[in-house]
Length: 191
Image (cartoon, rainbow, N blue to C red; front, side, top):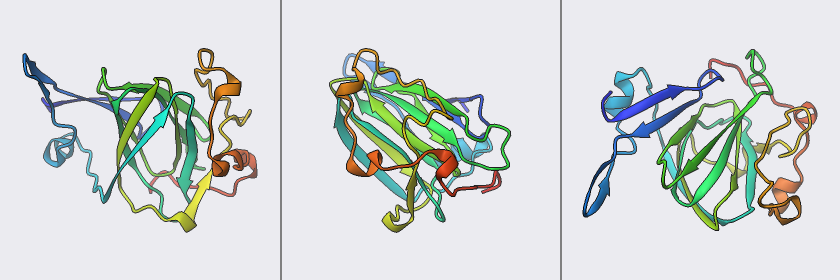
């Protein structure tokens, strides 16, 4: 693929993308997505929406999903650093309820692809983080669901030691999500 290094992770369908960065005394240039190059690797995705957020240290967003219009997401950080998490909600998956986390930053320029059928969230590790992502379906606020960020059955190992539990910042909505076992969601692997 040349321009991109794809690394499949331990949960089927989740992978990182590392772009080739061309740098000189002026700065750098990189492609962050190229439909033809992705298709050449067997990754045939159609993105319909791009989003961007800015958050400060200690903000934890998630864990989000959509019930009937699940979104695949290609996520990256353009400023700062986050710990990005994907949780498998595909009921027929051998990794149902399992999670994985990847540090994404402006320095490492890694991207993470989270397929449909996953909950997604991130914790901001730097003073400020700007987070951008492409979605395979449109956001529908009436279709939104979520999982409790600290569900003990999932047991995500969020890197909060340097931030402190009392310094985490959540939206009111994110504070109200239930545990996975109390959330009626059962995606299929062939979404």
